[in-house]
Structures are given as C-alpha cells and as structure tokens.
Image (cartoon, helix red, strand yellow):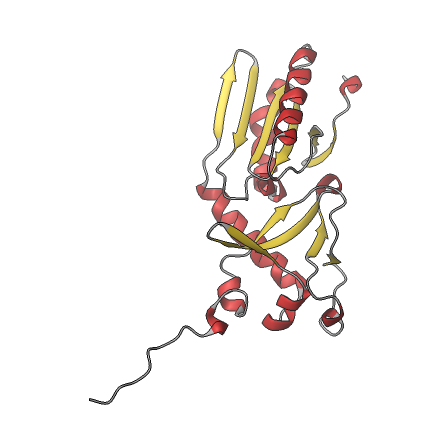
Length: 215
C-alpha cells in the first residue's frame, strides 16, 4: 500500500497568519492610560514593517487605549503591525471586525442586575476578557443609561478587564457614591489585569470623569 505523509495544518489557517481566521475571533480590549504602541488611526501598511512587535493602539473613551487581541487557551496575542502585513489588511478592518465580534458576544452575555431600595447596580463579569470593553458599544451605553438614569446620575467603572460595573446615583445618596468608588478602587488594586480605578459618569451617551460636587 502506498503511504502518504500525515496531513499537516497549514500555518496560514491559524489566526496569526490568516485574516479569514483572525477576523472571526479578534476583539478589542481596554488598557490602562499610558499603554504604548502604534497609533492605529495613522498606521499605513507601506511603512508598518518599521515597527514590528509593538501593539496596535487606538484612542478609547476617557483616555483609555484600545488594543486588539486574538484569544487563545490560557493566553492571548496582541495584534501589531506585523500581523497587518501578514494579513494584508489595514487597522480600520481590524477595528471593524473586532467591534463586530464584541457586539455578537455582548448580545449573548447576560448582565447581573441588582436592586436594593433606590440603589440599582448592573455589572458584567464573565471573565473572558471582553467585559470592560462592552462600554465601547453604543447599544450597551444606551442600555445602561435607559436602565439607570431614572435613579439619577449614571456611574460607570472599568476597574479590570473582566468587570464593567454601572450604577444609578440618586441626588441625595452621596454615601453610595463613596461606597462605589471604594469598591472600584479595591477591585482595580487587586486585579491581575487592572484598567482604571477612576469613576466615570454617562452623559448623553458618552463617558466623562465623575465630579461628585456637580450635584
């Protein structure tokens, strides 16, 4: 019987080498302020080979950088200029695919919703690296504003990658604002992958830093 070598999985079929595979799994991820990388809003393939190994970074809400990752079992790969060269795509295509994947995941990821008296808290903590990034989605910001604004102001925090938490703040409940801030600081301080210990407020669908004195 004629023997043939066992078939091998071509490297081009793996997400790091094949855009068709990567486009189905890439997603955005928030990082702490000051995270360095390549400006993904200006990068052009004609000169991207001069900055190998550095992650693609895009400005996100309230100064938080957005990077793009390919998830793996127990690890993830940060997308950089070398990936774009291998795929033959630009940063806008990566961003569009990443946001589309995040949106699909977000529609299937349930929220935890807790109401105690006039205090209403909503959070996402699925632990798959995309919880905090859900704030990038317009429909998520709309949902949080719709659900929580009746209580007063809408507080939002992303202390770590696996937690997005929001709460309605009544005008006469400054104690809750302090409790919320303490909780967020504790989570950020003890996180393996912290993002930000600040508290933000949702205003007209966008985030801004929370100012308690603005009541």
